[in-house]
Length: 187
Ligand SMILES: Cc1cc2nc3c(=O)[nH]c(=O)nc-3n(C[C@H](O)[C@H](O)[C@H](O)COP(=O)(O)O)c2cc1C
Image (tube, rainbow, N blue to C red; front, side):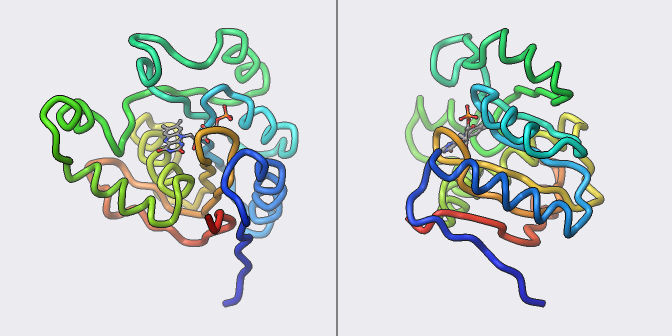
C-alpha cells in the first residue's frame, strides 16, 4: 500500500497546525477513535479539539517536578479548559525515563529504558514522545491496546510528529507497533 508522510524542514511548534490537519485526515481515513497528545501546557490539545470534535482525546503533561521540584507546568485554568472541552487529562511518571533518570542523574551512566528513548530519538524527539505517551496512557487505562490510535508529540513546544500505532502496556513494551508515520521533522 502507498501512503504519504509529511516531512517538515524544521522541527518545532511552527508545525502544530499542519500536524493537526494531517491527523484529522488520517483519523477519517482509518476510522481512528482515540488520539493521545503530549501537551505540557494543554494548548496543543485544545487546538486539536478545535479541529476534531468526534474523537476521544487524551492529553498528557510533564510529570510534576520535571522543571521545578514538586510543581506541575500546566495551570489550573488550563486543566479546567481541557475538562470543559471533553479532553481527558493525565500526568504520571514518564515511561521512557522514569526512576532510571533518577539513577543516571545520581550515579551517572544510562539505564536500558533511557537507551530505548535515545534510540527512538533517531527519528526525532516527537516520535519518541509518541511512543512514550502511548505507554503512559495505556498504563493509566485511558487508551485501548487492541486497536489502532493516533499519537502526537513534538520538540519541547507545540507538535511536529504524529504516528498511527497500536499501544501496549509497559510490562509488554515491545508489543507496541508503530503502523504509520503521518508526519515528522527532517532536522
Ligand atoms: C511525557 C512527555 C515527554 C516529553 N518528552 C520530550 C522529549 O523528550 N523531548 C522533547 O523535545 N519534548 C518532549 N516533550 C514535549 C512534547 O513533545 C510536546 O512538544 C509538548 O508537550 C507540547 O506542549 P504544548 O501543547 O504546551 O506546546 C514531552 C512531553 C511530555 C508530556
